[in-house]
Image (cartoon, rainbow, N blue to C red):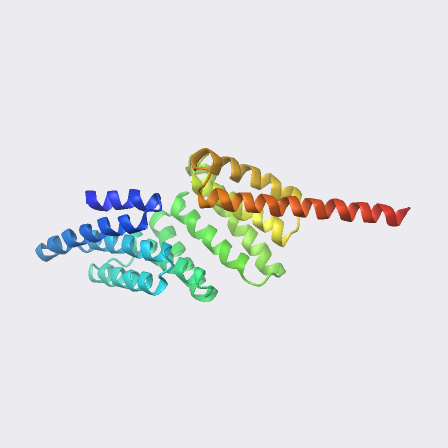
Length: 246
């Protein structure tokens, strides 16, 4: 539906209130079509978009409610292995990740990943990379230990490998993955040299596609300050170690 596409454009611009208006109008049309036939997928797509708006607005219960409706519609359509089902499972996982319910987040991400792999096979595909990146985030946000750190880094790199092959060099998903690896090196490995390396790539991409006041660029500037602080601490420790040797 054209209204749905307009809503998507507004959503990408973070105009969530206006996006919701278009999604609701699109849903009203879809319901009329639905009465004339089993148009489950069209309805599901629109309801899923409404769920995404609720998710961005941090109305998690409302988002989960919409996603549950989508799951039931897809079940009615007999779509047990479908890209929209995988997408919905991924969306549910994102809600649980925000709620810090890591077990449920990981369960839904793994279900989505398995379904995407069944659909696309061995093909490198951006949605597969998205799930890999999200699984990496689950392990990153859990308690730091050797297993979580190694697993987190492994998933981030798998995502980066796919995205690097299938996306334009200035795509925001690439910037996100480089940012995640930056934070991994900074907060898990305390390696400011590697952190700055990945930060530079991520920041360059965000800078080329976003306005200066965009929330992602603001976050990157905050990360830059964290790296500077880490570098200063490293230099200070080197000075202290040198003095001890004198």
